[in-house]
Length: 636
Image 1 (tube, rainbow, N blue to C red):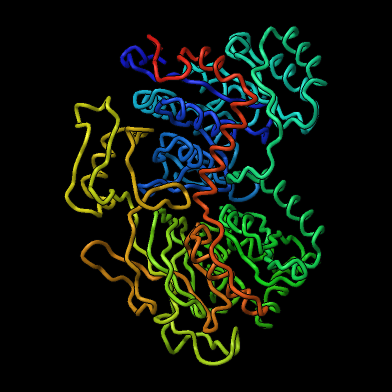
Image 2: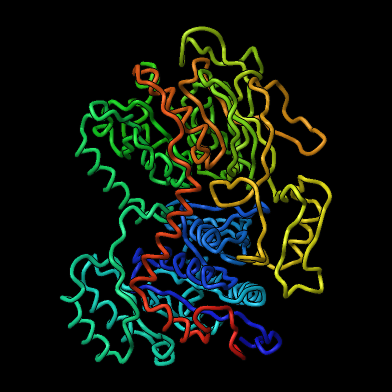
């Protein structure tokens, strides 16, 4: 980089690129992040441009790719937009929403994005790299797809060009499970320019199954052919327990769940609840359902056609990047008719974000931001309309939730990402619950808004301390605030913004306590909130305003919310599952799955697995680091 000499203490870098998509780069990047953290380094992830169906909301309400948020969690740091400055969210065929540093820039057709935006992307990416490299000891970069896509190389910002900007050696990752591994590695190298080939420092063979001694002759040939080392052969690791990111990963998960469902065709006979998730064409943030995969009494499956419906105990309508088109798909496919019959028969149903928006009377799109239809009728189960606005709401929130049948309120936290604005009808216009969902009464939004939420922001520990990296000595190494609850917009957030992206350090430099959210953020404990949430659009208290969110039928069988990560809240999730169990006459279960504990175990298990099969000392030597330790090793 031209400006590197002005920053003598630049982080060491390493980059993982793949011979194709879905070869396992994201998880291997997370593994290296955790390994370098364990070695005592302050480490951050980076991906210049990500195309993802799943988002992660940072502590300051910005949107990045889910993988970079997950990788930041592996590093033990707060995620920032510098870790993924450009996010592409597929919206419809050949059109994506471009999110720049966490905020929507606009919808771009692929050709327009390539011709008009990519030329200006370089300085944005380089600035983010400078920020991270000035704040950390190590930055682990992840590429996208393959670096050998000939038709895309002249506008590359995410593979070899990013590696050059970051001065990063490149490890080429190949998936042997899909076949053709040797050809994919040799072919990729052949299609690279000479200086790009020189940047490749070795290979990792991923998802291996079998006896590695039988593979060794091929590995010897590969090293002799290319003159580059095989740095590791990583055996396939099932059920990693970390979130998937893209549609390829989702399709793999769908196949795995389908196989499990076929193995246990009668969930009830196995003592399992049968929960069906509608596989929407534009499904987004499908990681919302991940905690259900770990529950011992749940059989989780995706449903794409009416023929796959079966007899589910509950149905989940997940988030959508195009709510209107996905609602039309449900009707055209016959899934909507199945869902309506399921609800009329007393079945349980949940809508999350886009799925929640479908539960109301109408979806209104006056600006045509969502689709080319100004008005679309929803399922009509609740008395509200949804109007899509130009501005997207992205925010981390926390609060309480209650459903009819639950014995108490449960604390919840998560994040919101939506342009839809819910407008409840006046009391006289409310939908008759008896004719639509359950017997008796009207749905009263003042009594049936099950979630009470307030912005979470960045909350300091009870002692008011937040430790920042030592290299920011000019700003102060330790800042103390007397108040126990420091929220977004307060002094600590202003300080955090002045400090660049990755300044929440690892190990002894990080002291964010409190209870961990689904995405790994840390929040302080909150007192229980009242069970019955009263009317009012917004109530301002001494500390922060709160919003009423969601809807629930009088009998609690149908509910919806904008809250992503709602099922990552362990007590609430188990309470809801126990409601399903009670209908079947089954005894309730206590909370046995703690999502954040499982997540931390998954990071450690992944790191142990990769350490055992990848030559980490050789990689650290290639990077100019000492093993183990945090030495920056002279000039970067």
